[in-house]
Length: 402
Image (cartoon, rainbow, N blue to C red):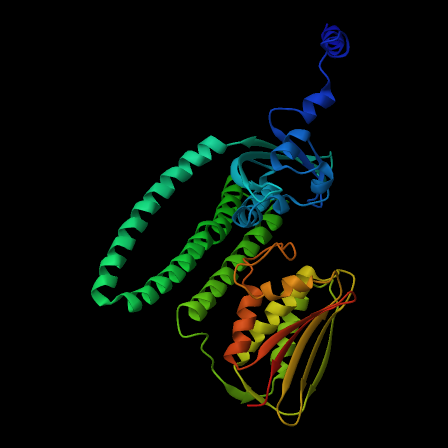
C-alpha cells in the first residue's frame, strides 16, 4: 500500500501540463536557498536569492556566507552562529543583513542545518533565507526614533551652549562630539556583537555539557570551541582598550627599556608557531645593539603582523620574519608572506580601525590588528610600510635611531 501511494505522488509530479517541476520549485521558491560545502564555501544558490541580491549565481558560488553579509552580520555569524552550527548542527531564525550588488542591504531571517553521513562526516550545510524587510524596518524605525529624539535633545543643548560660549569655539566642540559619538557607536557594535557572541557560544557549549552529564566524544570539541571563544573575547577587549587609548586618551602609553630584542621576538614567534603548527615560519636576526623599546608593545605589534600573515598568506608557503638593527640603532622589523597581492589603492585603508572585508576576507576579528600595530609604531616614533607584489606581501616596521 505504501508503494502505491509513493507511485501516485510521483505520477502527480511527472504527468500533466500543470505538473510540478522540482528544479523550478528550487529555483523560484518564495525563499532563498543555498548549500555550503564542508569548507564553508557556497556550492549552490537559487534564482530567488540571486534576484534579491542582484547578483548572478557565478558571483555567489565559491564565496563564503560571510562574504554576502555586512560587517556587523559577518562578525555576528563568525563569532556566534558558526560555532553554534558546529556544536549543535543547526540554527533557526537568525536575523542577518545581506548586501546587494548595489551596496544596499536585504534584511533576512535565516535557518541552517547540517547534513552528515553515517560516520558523522559533514556532507553539506543547507541554508534557507526569508525576507524580513518590514519586520526589521519596524524595529529600526523604533530605534532610530529614539536615537533621533536623543540626538535632537543633544543638538539643542549644543546649540544653547554654543550661543553662550561663542560660535567659533563651539563649532570645534560639536565636531569633536560628533567624532566621539561615531566612535561610541562603534563600541556599541563591538559590545553588541563581538563580546556578547563568544559568551553565547560558551553558554551553548556549557549547556550541552550539562545535558550530557558525562564526558562524551564531543566534549573535547566543545571545550576547544569554548576556549577559542574566550581567547577571541580577550583579544577583542585588548584591541578595544587600545583603540580607546589611541582615539579618546593621550595615545598608547609606552614603558621604554633597554634590553635585548631577539628573545622578545622569538617568544612571539614560538606562540604563533604553537597555535599554527602546520605553518612554516623562518627567521633572520641581525641585531647589533639593544634598542630602547616597550617590549610588550613590540611583541603585540609583531603578533598582529604575524597573525595577519597566517590568516591571509598562502597556506603552503613559509612566512619570513626578519629584524635588523645597525650600529647606529636604526631598526627594521618585517613580516613577509606569499599570496595574492593587495591592490595598491587599498593599501592606505589597511590601517584604518574596523576596516575589514573590502581588502581581503578575514576569518575573525574586528579589523583592529593592523590599526593597533600602526599606532604602536607611531607611539615609538616609527612607521609601518607595506610592499605588496605578485610574489609576496611585506609589512615593515621602521624605527629610526633615537
